[in-house]
Length: 383
Image (cartoon, rainbow, N blue to C red; front, top):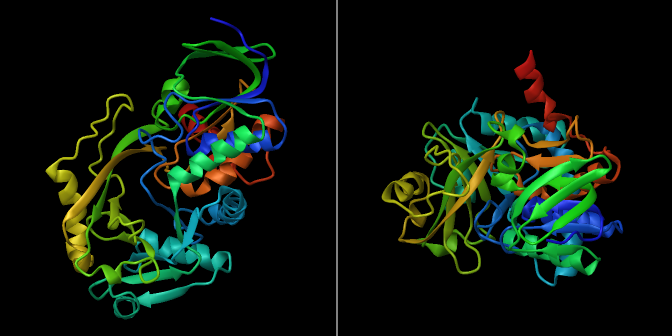
C-alpha cells in the first residue's frame, strides 16, 4: 500500500456524471484523479443502453430548462472533439391526456421559457407520426429540439478528453473507504491510498454505499429496456419518429426511433418497481419484463410490435421526490455529491460535470441548483 501524490480533487465513480466532472476539472488545470470500480464505460450501472433521451420541454419542473440549454451547448462542444456524432435531433413528444402530469408539465415548461412547440391531438399525431396510433382523448406537446445522446460514446469521450487534458484515471479499482482529513480527504482502494483537497462522489447506484447518509435518499431500482423489430421499419426511423414520453392509466413509458441497426426501443419508468442492491441486481430477463414493455407497444405502436431483438438491464437511482441531489456536504465542505438522478439525469451529464467542478473548486456554482439541495430531505426529517 502506497500513498501517492496529493490531488486537487478525486472523483469517485467515472460514469456519466463522473466522467464529465473529471473532464471539467482537468479542463480548468486541476490535478484530478478519477477512480472507477469497473471499466470506462461499462454496462453495470445507469449510463448505457445505446441511446438516452435529451429534451428541452421538461415536465418534471420548469427550472431544469436553463440547465438543459447549457447542457446542449456543452454536448456540442464535446462532440466537436469526439470525431463522431453524440447528439441526434429527432424532435420530442410528451403524450398524455389533459390533466396528466407529463402533458401539463411539459406545456408549462415550454410556455414559461418561450420554447418552440406545438400541441397535437391524437388525430394530428396519427397523421404526422403514423408510427403512433393513439385513441381519441390523448394530446401531445411536440418540441423540435429533443433527440437522443449516445451514452457509451459520451462517457468515453469525456474520459478520453479528461486524460488528454492531464487527468489521471484508474479503472477496475474499487474504493475500500474514504475519510475526511483536517485539510482534505483520503481515499483508500485495494491498490493504494490517495489524498486530495476535495472529494466528488458521483457513484451512481453505489452512492449510498459510498455515502451512507444517502440511504433512503438515493435508492437503486431495477430497470429493463427492450428493442423490437418493427413490422414497418420505415415508420420508426429517426427522421420520421421522435423520441417520446407517454403516460396512460398503466404507467409512464418512453421510447426512441431505431438507431445503429437496432430496433424500436422502449422502457417503462419504474418498470416492475423493484428496489435492488447494486451488487446483486437480477440482470436476467424474464417473461414479465417483456410483457411490461410489449403491452405498450401493442396498444400504441402496433407497427413496431415485431420480435424482440434485445433487452438490457440497468438501474435508476431514485430520490424521494425524483429531483436530483447535487450539493456540498454541510458538515464536510471538502466533499460534494451528485446522486439520485431518478432515470432522467443522463442528458444533464455535461452541465452536472461543470457544476461539480464549480463545487469542488469554490464550493458554489452560478447555476441554480436550489431544487437539488440535500437539506430538503434532512430538514424534513429533523422538523
